[in-house]
Length: 307
Length: 280
Image: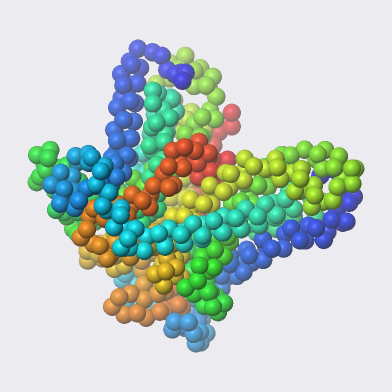
C-alpha cells in the first residue's frame, strides 16, 4: 500500500483484476434487479413485452380481487410466519445461545447438533418432515400413539388449522442453529469480568440477561432479525415442497413467494405467465424489505451499548 | 470450561441448562437418525417398527436407487455445478478484492460499494428478468445458467471476506518484492495468495453449501432430467417412488451424507464459514 506513486503504472493490472468480476455482477445482478423494476410498468404475457401501462400493474394488485385476495391472505400468512419464527427460531436461538454460552458439559456436541440441520438442503428437510408428519405412518403420530396420546395424532399437513404451524416448525428445526451461533458469537465477545462483577454486585440471571447480555447482543439481533425478515418474506421452498404451489389445504399455507411464483411461471390449472404483475409484486416486496431492514438496523443500533 | 456462575441455586440452574440442551439436541438429531434407520429397512418394516434400529445389512434400498433412479447423474451434475461455481466465485472474488484492498485508485470505493449492495439483494426477486435474459442467451435448460447465477450470487460475500483479510496483510511484503523487481502479478500469485488460504476456505464453504443445496434456480432453469442437480432430482425421484418409503429415506440419506460427513469432520471451519459476515 505504501507504493502509491506507482499506482498509475499498475492501472492496466488493476483494470484486468476488477473487470471480469464487475462484468459478472453487472450482467447477472445489477441489470436484472434494475430490469425487475422496469418490467413492472409493462403489460407482459410470457416472454413478450407488449405495452407501457404505467402504474396499472401496481394498482391491479390492490384492486382486482383475483390479485388482491390471494396477496392479502398470503401477506397475513407471511406476518404470522415472521412473528412465529421470531419467537420460536430467533427467540429459541437466543436462549440456546445463552445456555451454550456457559460452555456446559458436552458444549461441542450440542453446538454441532444444533447447527447440523442448517447444512441440509430444504428439499431434504421438506421431505424428511413430510414423511415424519405423515398421518398414518409418520414417526410423529407414531410417537404420540406409543405415548398413549393417540387422540392428539393429526394429519398435520392436511389440516388447514395445523398445516402452517407444521411448516413453521419444520423451518425452525432447519434454521434454529443459525441465530443460535450468531448470538453465541456475540455473547462470547462479552468480557467475563463484566459478567463476574455483575454477579458480585448481586445481579440475578434475568437482570444480567436483560441489562448486559441483551444490549451487547443487539448487533447480533439486528443481523438475525434482518435475515429472518428477508427469509420470511421470501419463503418459498418449504411450502412449495411440503404443501404445494397452491398452499394447500384450502390456501392455508399460501405465502407471497408462492403467489409470486404462480404469477410469474403459472400454475397447474392455468399456465399463464404474467411477468408484468409478477414484477410489480416483486418490486413492492423488495421496497418493503429494504424499508424494514433499514428501520430495524437503525432501531436496534440505538440499543447497543459501548463497553 | 470456566463457569462464571457459582452461587447456591446454580446447581439447579446448571441442571436445567443440561436438560434443555440434551432435549434440544435429541430433537435436532432424532429425525436424522430415523431417516438413516429407515434407509436400511424394507418399507413394511418401517411401518411395523418405525423406531427400532435396523441391522444395517439390508442395503437393497441403496442398490435400487443407484440402479433404478438417475441418482448418480444428479449427483454428478451437483458436483459439476457446485465445483465450477465455487471455483469461479473464488477466482473472480479474489481478483476484485485484491485490487480493492491492495491498490489505491479512484473507483475502489464505488466498486466495493457495488459488491456490498449485492449482499443485501435477494436475487430470487429478480427471477423474471433473469429468466428473460437466460432465454435471450439461449441458456434455458443449461447448467451454465446456474453456474453464472451462482457465481454472481457468491461474489459479494467473497469480495467482502477477502477484502477484509487482504487489508490486514502488511505492505512491506509487497514493497520488498517490488524492490527485488517482481512484477505485480507475480507479487499477487507468489507472495500474497499463499497467505490467503484460511479466508479462501471460509469463503469456499460459505458459498459451496447454499449452491449445493439450492432448489429454486434449478426449478426455474433446468427442464431435462439429465441436467438436474441433486436437490431438484430428489423431488422427481420422490414423485416417482411416492409409496416406496425405504427408497425415499435411502435417497434422502445419500443426498445428506456427503455434506454431513464433511461437516462433522470440519465443524469448526464450517460454522465459521456459514455464519461469516453475520458474526463480524
